[in-house]
Length: 212
Image 1 (cartoon, rainbow, N blue to C red):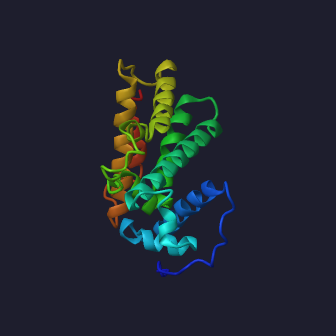
Image 2 (cartoon, rainbow, N blue to C red):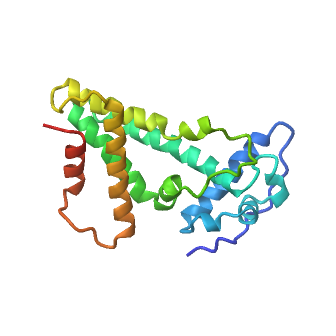
């Protein structure tokens, strides 16, 4: 495993007005520490500062504490998830069934290729402190909204095409599908050999999407 304590080369000081760039570099440093095989414990203010090539106090104008950095990582990765799902949908063509499976498989692939980031998204270990008033309940509730909307859209397309049973609660159906995908992604991450058939993902998607 790569040594998480490795320091980045000395970083030049940002010019006036470049504070946003430093904020992005702090987030990138946290993501790099996760990708090296660590977990949230590897992401401390000191380790992030070392990786970004800055002094730890330079973090405070941008983030109040470690959970605030982790929340920024979660926001970024949720945005990345939405982009990945949207691209999968666009590349699948007009067929609703193909769109559904493309989006769901893209979700599972992202969880498989970036397991540490994925675990952090849903780990619940990044909640900001009560003193951090820069983060509101609305901010937390909006996490994942775009990806969930996309799932609901492809489910709705299947219903409209007559290949899935209709529902009076499309949003709830999308939530159920997301939870099913998350459960499968989690099991694949923690179990050395997944029990069951090779087509378990297809079965899961078919059942939760109420495909005919």
